[in-house]
Length: 368
Image (cartoon, rainbow, N blue to C red):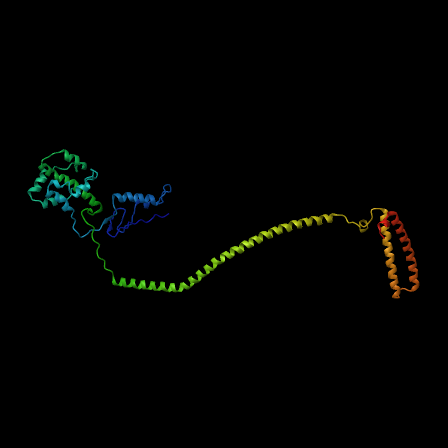
């Protein structure tokens, strides 16, 4: 994975301060970015990079405020305590602003305010101050005396005036240290500069106006073209919304029909299964003769059944012989012979039928 590209983007009233890890364009070149993804055991991520840059920029800010043409009134505020006396030192905003800070500011080289003080004062006054002021101790802790020590000592006015340069030297050193970090005076002394009036390029204004007119014209044309289509689509949407209820009703009706069809189908399947079982059962049954089915319960009844059948057959034969004689298909001699034979047999069978009926009791029941 490639390392990210980090840039410092200053605001409109600030500039980039080049350093070891930040170039003039604002691009950051930290060793963490150079070793990005090289060690597989240590995962490189944006959070760790932001923490490292936050720590580095906390000690060395990458931006500073643009210099302004207004004179800085900070030296005047620092030199006013010398002209007004030692009583105004505690009332100055510099002392009140930086006195509550940590009593251990970092050591700095001798600041130039001593020279400015010497130039603004008479010759006798700076000489006495330089003679009375002792050399500052090597430990910067004692450069700024604490407030308790100032109240415990009760020196005369001359000693207080002699100790004034030492007190101002600590405050000046802390003030110079803060100004060296951001290269800007404290907002307590310098008001915010008024923004410079900007003049617009006439050609740029003309181009912007032309682009605005062109975009506006294109938007109007697009609106005119798309308005009918939008109305048509909205009408289709309304029709679809109205048809939604009808579609839902039809869907419910079709679902009900589907349920009924499923029920009827199940019923028909059950009946078809029953019919198949009956067909299989009938198929497996043995064949039965008609004579075996149409018979009486006793031998006499079977004999009576056969005699009645023969009597009817003889009667039919006599009928068809008479019909053949009338159509002259049969001559008279042949007809008479056959009729005589059939009449004798019919008489014998009818006599036997009468006898069986008397024995079985069918005459009493009224059967013929």
